[in-house]
Length: 75
Image 1 (tube, helix red, strand yellow):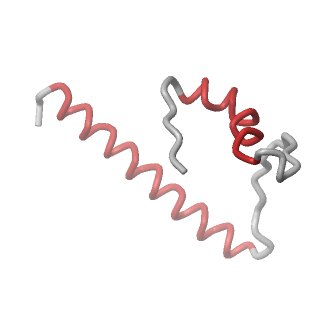
Image 2: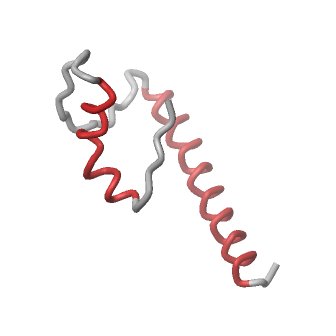
Image 3: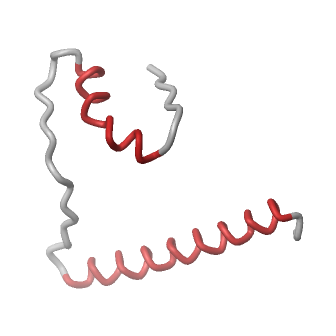
């Protein structure tokens, strides 16, 4: 199944529950529950996740800067 979303991420987020209900077609009970981030049981796991999350965020920032350079014609 393919779904085409036209519009913004905010619009998609607002309609997420309705989309899930439409896809479920009455086969599943769908309720809205907020997503809560959990920390791992072991402290070392949290430290590893924090480390790799920071690296991932840095990589995304660098990628955004490179894309902006390409769009501006500076690269």
